[in-house]
Image (cartoon, rainbow, N blue to C red; front, side, top):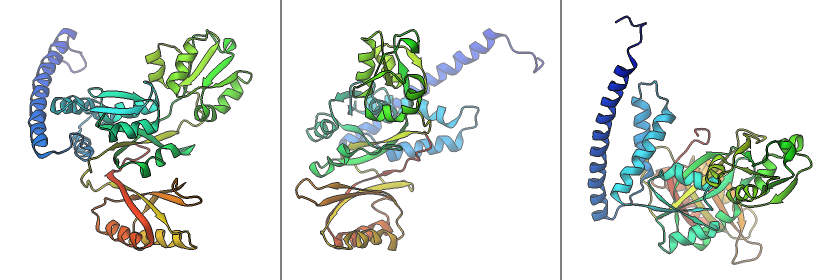
Length: 364
C-alpha cells in the first residue's frame, strides 16, 4: 500500500486493541513483581515509598524513550503505574493540608499517584502530627513559594517533631477565576487569601478593580464560597474548581506565569543516594558575634553548595534563632559529612532533616 494512503481505520484500531491486550498482560506481570518486592520489603522492614528508585525509573525512561511521546507524558503514565504497583505492595495513606483541591493536594497526587489514599488535614501542624501518631504513612506540606518565600508554619514544626524529609516536589501555580457568574461585569466579590490575591493583584486591578476581596483560605474553600454566591468568584486552581463543580470564568490570571511552590514529602524513611541529591539541615548557634559566619564557612571550605538558608525564632528562648539550610549532596557524601562535622563543632545542636533526590524547580 502507498505510504501516502492511510490504512483503513478499523485495521488501525485492531492493532491498537492488540497492543492494549499486550499492555494489560505486561502490567499485570509488573504488579505481580511489585507484590513480590512488597513481601521482601515487609520481611526486611523497608519503606514502600522509595523516591530514589522512582528517580532511577524515570531517568531510564528518559534515556530509552524513542518518541514521539514526550518525557513528561511518559513520566505521568508511569507515575500512575508505579502508584498502582505500590498499592499492590501495601496501600499507603498520605496526609495533606486540605481540604481537597488545594495545591498541597495536587502535590500529593503528583508524588504518590491516584492509587494512594489521601487524608485532608486542617493545618500544616496536623500533617506533622498525623505522621507522628501513626495515622498516616506520609505527609505533604508546602515549604516555599518562588514569589512569597518560605512557609514559616512548616519550618516551625521541625523542632517539635521527629519526622524526616523523604522527597520534594514542585508544582506550578496556575491561578484561575472560578464563578457561576456569566461575565466579569457580574462579579462583585472575590474569595481568596493573601498569597493568591498578591500573585494576581495586577490582573485584579485591571479587570475587577471594584470587587470586594474576602479573605478565604485555602483555595478549595474559596471555590466553595464562590459556588454559593452568584455574584462571587474565587481565585483557585483547576482541581479545586473541578471538585467543587464550579466553572472557570477566566483561566490563567496570575501576574507571573513562572510562579511555583516547593512541597516537602514527610515520613521516616531515609532515601539512598542517587547522585543528584539535596540535604536539609537544622541548627542553632551561640548568641555571639561571628557564629553564623563560622557555621556557614564550614560548607564553603568543603565545597558544599548552599541552596537556601532561613532563620526562625526559637520557641524555647527569647531572641534566639534556629537556622534551616538546604545544601547540594547526600548525607553520605564525604564532603557533606566533613562540613556537617565542622558545623557540629560550632553549633549548639545540628539535625539532618533528610537527604532526598533533588528536583529541578524548572522541570515541572
